[in-house]
Figure 1 (tube, rainbow, N blue to C red):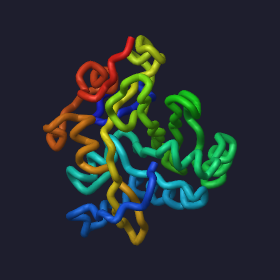
Figure 2 (figure 1 turned 90 degrees about the vertical axis):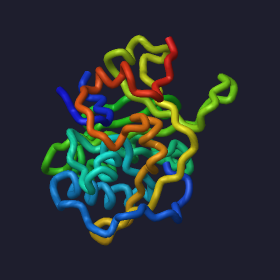
Figure 3 (figure 1 turned 120 degrees about the vertical axis):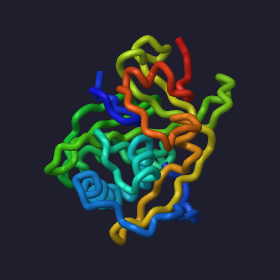
Figure 4 (figure 1 turned 45 degrees about the vertical axis):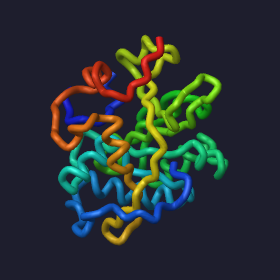
Length: 219
């Protein structure tokens, strides 16, 4: 399957509230199945008191065209927030089930590279959740955060997963249909997609493993 940018793992965070407001966010995006799923997710995660932010292809599409139209939805959660709120896998899954989401796939584990792909209520749109972890100073890692994706070339990596590095970043506040959201800043997208991230490029997930700039090469 080809797609525009982003990370689709199925082809195979947030520390404090941000006081920064995303510019040019005066118009709500179309109320399509993507936006409806995000509004549904906002209610679900509020039930867990769990902060989260729009990431990867979902953030990319918003910055480019004020919509979320892609093959799926991508969000990020900081590991600190899961731990601080003592949200177990069982609590997380039971809560999303209660709000109409379904579990499609689970990846990794809580200590290293955890993530989930859910199915949105009604539409069955894929909803990817990426957990962001601190770098390991003992391994001389110079970045601040990393998250994981799986399958394909990732199976050949040291941990049988692809790790993606990010410098420290603060999600920006975003208002949409009267609800508060957070979105990764542009710096995040530059590190993931390169300086020409605003220009659409067509490629698949497995192709992206060969050239996206922030993949940590560890074999």
